[in-house]
Image (tube, rainbow, N blue to C red):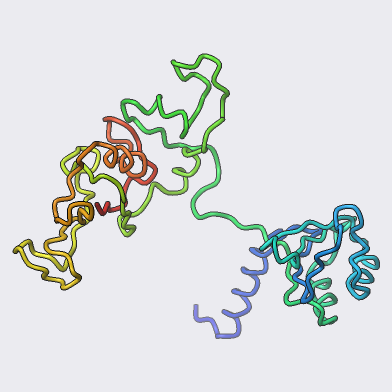
Length: 256
């Protein structure tokens, strides 16, 4: 069945209208006033900013509390919380019409890409149970009194993404063990170099195929001390590969 441009437009509007429901906090606005209010004790006196137009708006619409946000040193951006739910889009228009703000907007609710919910991904790396900084279940063997969930919630982040090979991660340290199995197939290669003892890509560094050793000014960026390999592993060891540890990004390419 053919649809006219108008019907398609109406369908799209209806769709995005549904998606927009509950996409912002129902009783809050974010405003940036064009005159900094550096002397305002907004926590104790939310309706006494010293700017009559601003205070009048807040009083008329039942502002209950004010919280500083944005670049805090500027002291000009605030989250306004109203005593009751409001027609936020109507309020945006009313506040904007006063011309005392750089911008006025709802307090939008953002969602990360991926699927919300409990992590379905449990890395099978041999020593993942020791990485309590990433996932702490309270059962870390060396610390019987470990506090559950005192961690970075890395498992929930992996539920959204485990990284991308489009990301190039540079490790600035003592070098890296290039043949380590945790980095197999992940070492970045400079497409402009061919390893012919010359600066093929003309960037000032000879044969910087996988990176460069700036300490000794040479192309061999193998690890001299072991620290760089450790750092690279924390950031980017391949996860869920049945060996060793799990890094944060399992798929990025690693520049040494």
